[in-house]
Image (cartoon, rainbow, N blue to C red; front, side, top):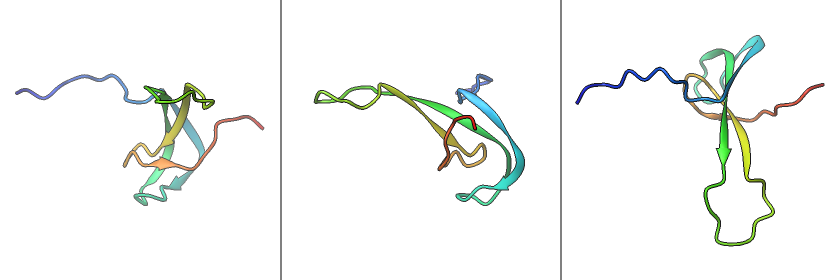
Amino acid sequence: MQPTTDTTPTFEAEYLLETPLACPKCSKEMATLHVVRLLRDKVNFTSTLPRKGYVIICPSCKGILSATLGGI
């Protein structure tokens, strides 16, 4: 089997940090953050939770980080 050469990003958006920081998961320095979109697949009850959302991940280890998207 040949390795895939797909260059499609696995994230929805990329944000540049004003100051590079160390990832709390892998300790590597990161200058950008990746945003991945969440889509609700199925539930076995009537849900009041949103149908979609976002998580912010480290570009190196893909660990989910505690952060929010929003303006000041």
